[in-house]
Image (cartoon, rainbow, N blue to C red; front, side):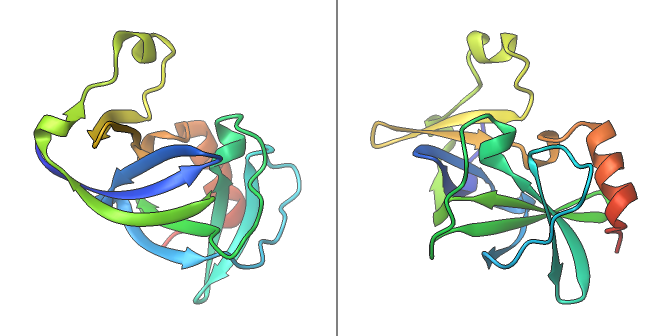
Length: 154
C-alpha cells in the first residue's frame, strides 16, 4: 500500500482513523437537533455556517455504546458526492503519516464480516489503528434517506 496521511480518532477506546483526503474539516461538538423517524445511529442535524449537515454517531453505528460528550468530542465533516455528512467521534488526537509498510489489508476474518468500510489496518509502534473508509459507512439507501430528509446538497 502507498503511504497515507491519517486523521486519528477514538471510538470508545478503539483507535481509528481515516485517510485525511476524506476529511473536509473537523469541528467542535455543537448542539445537534434531532430528526424524527431516523435510524438510531443518526444523531440529528447541525447548522454548519448556514448548511444543514446530518450527524452519524459512529459509536452507535458500530454498536459500541453511547458517545459521552466531553470537551474532546469532535465532529468529522466529510463530503460524499455533493453532500456533507458529519461523524461524531469521542476525540480526534492527531494527523499522522503511515508509511506503506505500516498498512495492511483487512484480514480474511474482517472481510468475511462484510466490513467494506474498513480500508486497512495501520500498525505504528505496536499500536493497531483501524482505518475506515468514511464514504462506505452508510449504504446507498441510508445516504438517500438522509439526503432526502435533510437536503444537504451544495
